[in-house]
Length: 137
Image (tube, rainbow, N blue to C red; front, side, top):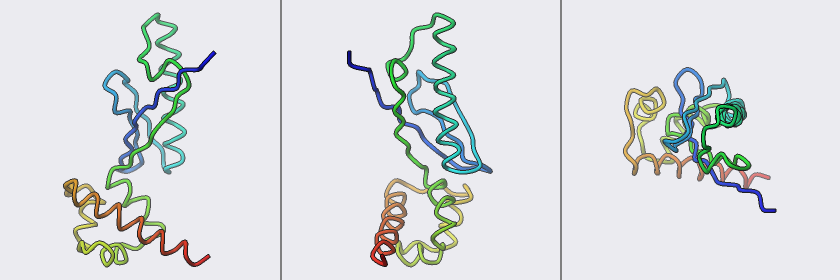
């Protein structure tokens, strides 16, 4: 017997804490956490709780909830910047991406929202710095 394992795209954003919600409009669920690991665990628990409640109420499950929950996490630019603040300075990221430190701060604090091309530059800059750090070992 093959178990159904549909993936659920989950967006993680940041305001005062990390917050997560599925990107599937059929699944109404949200969770928060102080850390990235905490919000990831909390959203999976919330989805399991939501699935159990739907079953108890006799409501048909969306296909993503019919088997094992397989989350695919996507971090907003703001969440990426807040998470990497512990490991990468904004100055280093500005140097890597060519984006002004102040602009990165605006994105991190939700004062501005980057366009997709800028989001990609930031993600690529974080990856590039991470790859160079791996060369140390």
